[in-house]
Image (cartoon, rainbow, N blue to C red; front, side):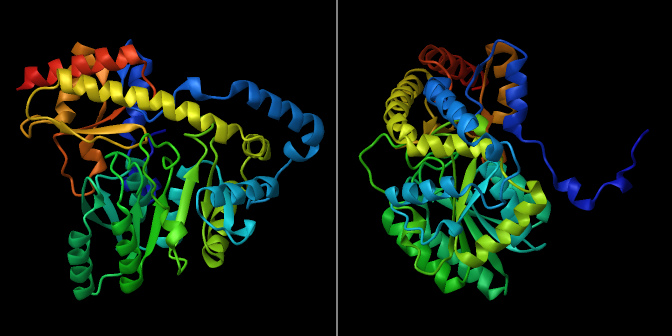
Length: 402
């Protein structure tokens, strides 16, 4: 049967395949060096400890863990997460202010459903996380891009935008930000700007969604307080994940938010999946309780710092004049600008077929359609040898275009 377009809801026309997902499929089909995905290194997965936690859980709590769970999440996990958040500097008044997610991506989809009416203004960094754009887009907001520099969102530019939107009587629902080790740009919002951002949110009455996958993966002795830890009005929704600090295969994330917001998120999650797997939640609980995550962070930071430094060194060696890139203090990515006459969406065709190396073209990360000469490079997953060889190949491909 051929299905006519009339069967589909209008919003499906706004659904877009993730370029990152497409790249991963591409890589699986051939011998290609990939800087495309944001995958952690399998060397960081605490396999043996996970086996022990699962065995203990099934033997001692099997009836509970193999059954349906509550929508809000395993109490034991939320209790440990409350302690974990306090260790990160965020005071959570009750475990009821924590909601467990089936991956932080579920949280992004939830924010779209709960917050966005058609035409609402959503403020996004330029560039920003591609999966967030794709999660919000079906609800048809008006995206407004916020320029950044090495210290994150440029506050003076944001203030001009806010004044302009106010003069047009436009409703801003929220500002979405990855303030620490931003994905994809790798930059970190300065403390001074964090404080001013919260002041502006209060003055212009909008929420802030703080997406925080990377703040525990820092390579420099820099302290940055989470926005949620500075939030005196309950305007910040804090979103995080176990994917980068334990295992992405568990598909576990969480939200910290004030009571009224959590109530709506719980209702939305009930419709989505009823509950997150209790067994997978128990693994995360055990990893926190046994300090597996806290101890493993030292290994993760050391490994990724070495890989980051290797990629920065290779970029200096092999990329031609006219290119520039970020120098992230943590996280998994380096963002690159090549000469403006090189379109990285076109370049990747040569890279994948001729040079056997891929990256994520940067334009998809920009809600205003800019960034045609940019690319995101991941350094956590490839080996040291692949980083050296892959950057060399990319440099050759760029030089050929010039």
